[in-house]
Amino acid sequence: MHASYAMPRHWLFKSEPGVYSIHDLARDGRTGWNGVRNYQVRNFLRDEIRPKDRVLFYHSSSEPPGVAGLAVVASSGTPDLSAQDPASEHYDEKATKEEPRWYQVDLAFEETFARLVPLRELATTPGLEQMLVHRKSRLSIQPVTPEEFRIVVALGRRKDR
Picture 1 (cartoon, one colour):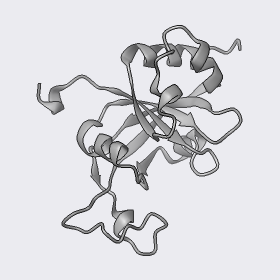
Picture 2 (cartoon, helix red, strand yellow; picture 1 turned 120 degrees about the vertical axis):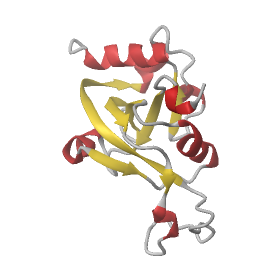
Picture 3 (cartoon, helix red, strand yellow; picture 1 turned 135 degrees about the vertical axis):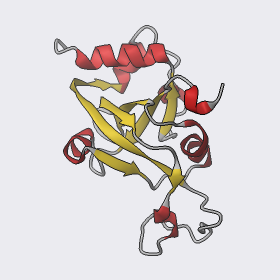
């Protein structure tokens, strides 16, 4: 099946809330997701993540870490120009216009959850035992199954916990 006709996929994007939070995305409406410097994640951004894919927005390096809301991918992968800017903290001297090396997508705000869904709850909720966030915790972007996405969204929208 041609990628442009594929069903939207589901992802978990991690961000430290002190750097960029779901509240920042709500305020901005849309942002470029740049500065990723991991080749596996670069490949997701360049080759797999597509507009309309759904995103669990995860706050990492916080106490507790967890899923804070939803976003939607608003653009296909494009070269991350911060890699070519010597003034950027994400500069990579090997990135060029001809060989950009690094990619980014745009994310658009969708929803802030009624409550944060903490990592420890993700680990103990039936149906979420196999989420990559438990095993490949260093990856800043990870695929999520449609069922995992549905369960996490239901947990985030519950106000009783």
